[in-house]
Image 1 (spheres, helix red, strand yellow):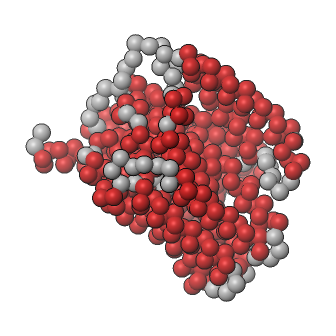
Image 2 (cartoon, one colour):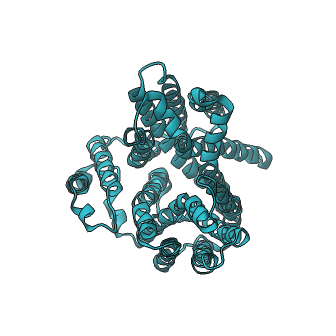
Image 3 (cartoon, one colour):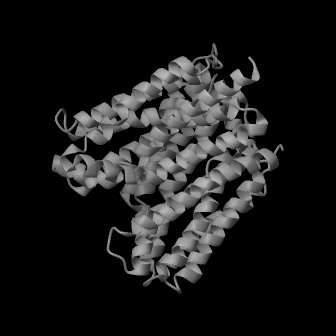
Length: 461
């Protein structure tokens, strides 16, 4: 194929997968601002209604490495197409649940959506990372990270916008609007994406390992959600102990299964690889850092004495500047490798959090807050996505690239699940802005720990 044809092929791959990342990422946060409206239409309380969000995040995290393994084994193109179709089916179920089936159908639809998203996102990153030549891989992964960041930041805004457009009774359209997009995306993927054969093995698929893994992760995340780091009694509550004990048993059983499996879901030898362990450690603390964005509105409202609900506008400062970071990081990665840009991003983010913690809280000002959040956004943009995806691709074979990216995505998701309890604990344990200041310092410490872990990573250049 000539150079022009090759460029067009890479352009088609990038465009299709970027749309997949956008769709999959938007629905992570889109449901949050309309949750109360949806649960009210079913006559539910908060404790029940929150499961339309919880069930999605739980199954998304638990299934992502399993779907990644299937993509590596049977091919990324068919896996991507099937996941796009699954996302459309799940969206239809969610939209029709108001009149057919009720809240239980909505929950089933959210699970089916999660299956689709947890395939689209890692498959897209793996295919982008392996399709582009090494000298352009960082830039491509940077664009992918920028789109993912855009969808995560503006997902909630899209949800609020669609609700305003269709009205409270029209919330099902929030799900229906993505169906034609998914149909067109699936058709484009089927016809335009290159067909790459997966590493089809004659060995039996590790179905027992996959089942145990999903149950193990679900139990682990459920136990994390019930922990209050500033209440010792929460650690010994039944809501924590029972699922955590089940997760520990699952880990033992999973390790036994994987040692015997001919084609395991997870290669235990990765746990002996310093490069992979360092990448997983950094990914965990980056997840802890990213989730702190959800507390920015509350912080802004307390700092500037704003009306409740108006602090969300300040998240835009993080969102806008986080869009520049991935593209800059991608270019730097192509020249310097992933370690230095990631180290720089973590350092910038840490400075931003410390600036807000010690200076902005002492001198309340909209301008100073926007400056601090902009620095944080730039640091986050340089740190999230592209560098760690590049690092894991360096450390694993191409045949394992999708499940490898899925694994660090899971690790990052665990960080986003575990850290909110700690961060909120700092807020509630302090007086006035002191608690928020301690919370910001805690996130800065997350960045510093990531930098220390990163010192053990040796880039291949």
